[in-house]
Structure formats: structure tokens, C-alpha cells
Length: 563
Image 1 (cartoon, rainbow, N blue to C red):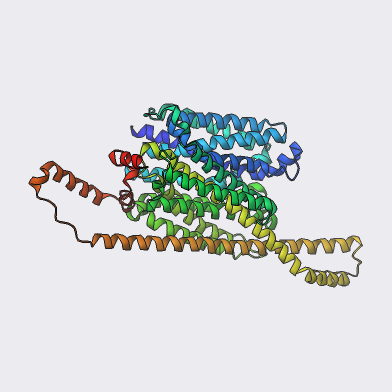
Image 2 (cartoon, rainbow, N blue to C red):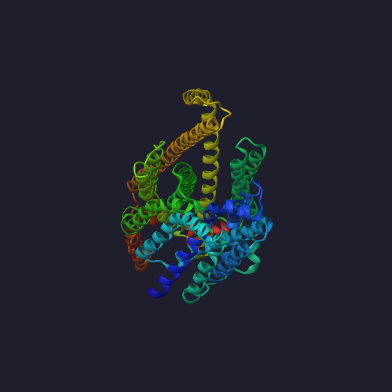
């Protein structure tokens, strides 16, 4: 494929990635307008977001299987067309049930698109340099999509109507579709349709586990972690997940070969994606409320103040893709990137009442963007590298699953933590506020029931509420920084252990090879060529060679027969 067509493929993939990611946050700003326009209750409002998340998370593994069966071009175009039509239907929804159903259909087609576009980039960009640049751009798009969603959602809601937060997907999808028509590679060998339901039990267990885990996180956000609905969903999801792993170990044609998780670089990429999206969505939830409630920013201005993070994320992603990844690999970028994220979150946790944006928020967002830029682009690259073409969709589906689960757990954990912390703060400082109210009322010589007295009491209540929120956000960000820093430490220890193991393996005595004549000159030349090629590979690529079941050809066939 020539460079022009490759560039068009990348343009289409970036537009699709942007559309999928921003749809997770663009709706959040428009929820109050949706509620008043459609007459939704407070209990119905969260389902506008939940319906999309459940369909996306629950079907992404199935989407990876569908892409494998029908082929990349068809899966990509069907996904874009379905997502555009579902977005149009959501914008035209006359009622809450119609909106929720359309959002669920959006999530279903997003579950097909997410693994397909990663598999597409993995197939088209094969040279190490161009591959690093392509995944750097795709990863930075995944990072900045959430912030752009807030900016776009606020602007469209204020200037036009909440329905335009749905309509905006239509031109993006149509543009990506038209570009794909002239640029996508021809369809490769397809797996017969009858194999769509191969390992149907494993597929059902995997999709059911992800669905219940995502729904359990949503229930935790609404009802708390100790609620029966939350515990039952999380426990059942965990049981199904264990059952899924056992089934995949025993299946003759597993939907997700467990050998895919054996490569250190791929396993690290899945863990890094989970932790990074956990941190990203948790920070966005806290900072959105902080900017709007404490700074008094409008939804659109709230999106604007996230732009410094977007800038450093994009710049770092480009630099990492061109220099750091080829030289040091994922084993360097993952722990360092998570450590930088933890540092940025630690700076943000120093927020206090009356702070200027430039004192704490701006430096914290800049550092956080650097951390995301070191991790997200590398995740997409390392998570799909070394995987045979026919399994690229499944590897991409695992990345999308980790992204969805990380986002759900981050929002649920930090939202419930902030609620409890704020409630505790209000309880502890009630007497203090009462004394302060009595002092101010006495100083003004007014009764609490008078107009001026009610204003004094209301002002103190607002002050207490703001202080409680800031205390909760600060404590929540501190907790988040500890979690991310601990994850970085675990990954760093794993990298050191892997390096030590590799050094020890190289020091083992090598058996003397048989004479050339006994093996044939062609065999010797092939072995020498293989050694030379292995020496030229980046470290993370050589790690994948330890798992031949992931390589196409005889080794993969032997592995499949053994299973």
C-alpha cells in the first residue's frame, strides 16, 4: 500500500477513535438539558450514560469475534454506518426509552468499531517507525477525546441544543466512512460464518462477566459499594470471569487464547490501559465538578481549561512514539508514564479554597498530560504487536475491554469516595458552622428567621458545602495518586525481574552445535539469519518470540492442535 493510502487509513482511524472516545463524555455535560427536555426522572438520567457503557463493555469481545469472521473492511464500514444511524436516532428521540435504546445501539456498534480500527492500523502499518507514529497519533486521540468531549458538549449545549451532542457523530462517521472507501485494503481470507459461534460458551461467559462488572460499577456509583445490587453484580461478574478463564484454557477453539496474555509487553499494556483510564476518568469527574462548582466555570469553559493537558499529551505522544519507544520499548514507558501520572495527580490533590487556576491546576494538568502521553500510545502499539492477523481483532478487543473497565471502576470508586468523604466532613463541622452562624447573626443583630438572617445562614451553608467538596476531591485525588504510584512500582518490579531473568538466560551454557555437514548448509544459513534478525528487533518484540503460539504458521497450528 502506498503512503497516500496509508495516510488516508490513519485519518479515518483517528476520526473513528475520536468519535468513540468523546461519546463517553460529550453527553455528560448535556444531561441536565436532556432531563428537562424529555421529562426524565433523577433515576432515569444516569441510564443515558450507562446504556452506552453496558453495551460497549458487554459486547466488545463479541465485536472482536465478528470482525475476525466478516473481515476488516466490512466490519469497519458496518460499524461506522450503524453508529451514525444510532446517533441520528438518539438526537431525534422523543422520549427517554427511545434515547436509552439508541444509546445502547451506539454502544453495540462502538464495541464492533473499537477492536476493528486497532486491528486495521495493526495490519496497515507494519514498519516499526511508521507503526510507532501511527499508534502515537491514535493513542493521543484516545487521551484527548475525553477532554474534547467536555468542550464540545458544553459548546453545543450552550450554542444549539443537547440533541447536537448526538448529531455531531453523524458527519464524523460519514467522513471516516467515505475516506475508508478509497483507502482500506482489500478483504483478506475470511473465516467461515459457521465459526462465528465457535466456543459460544466462552463468548457468553466473557461478555456476561464484563457486562456484570461494568453494571456493578454503575450500581456502586448510584447505591454504594455495600448495596446488595452492587455486591451481587460484582460477585457474579467475578465468578463468570473465572469461569471464562477456565473455559478458554480447556476449549479447542477458544474465543480468547490465553497465550495472548503471556507476552510481558502485552500483559503490561493491558494493565497500563486499565490503570491509565482509571486515573483519567477519575480525574475528569473530580475536576469537572471542581471547576464548575468552586470556580463557577461554564461547561464550555470547563472544557477549555483541560486543553493544556491535551497539549502536553499530544506532544509527549509524538516524542515517545518517535524516540522513546524504538529505543527503550514499553518496559520503560509504562512504569515511568504511570509514575508521572501519579506525580501530576499528587499536584492536583493540593487544591484548596480560593486557589487560582495557575497555582495548582495548570501545573498538575501539564504533568498529567505528559504521563498519559507516555502510556496511551504505547498501549495500542505493544498490545497488538506480534499477534497474527487473524487474532488482531481479539487483541484489540482486550485493550478496549481494559479501557472500559478502567473507566467504569475509576468513576465508581472515586465518586462514592467523594460522596462519603463530603458527608463525613459536613457531619464533623456542623457544630462549628452553627457557632459561626450564631456569631454572625449576633454581629448583624438580626434573627435567623429574618430575610438578612436567612441570607447569612444560606451563605454559611454554601461555604461549608464548597469546603466539603474540596476536602473530598483533595482526599480522592490523594487516594488515586497512591493507587497509580503503586501500580507503577509493581510494573517497575516486574520489568526488573524480567531483565534479570533474561540476563541469567543469556549466561546459560550453550550446547555445541552439530557439524555443518550433518545439518546441511541451508539449515545453518537459516539459523544464522534468524539470530541476526532477533538481534535487530526491539526488546519488546523479542519477548513475543517466547510465545510461538501467537505466531502464524506451523507453531500456531501445533499449539491449536494441542489445545
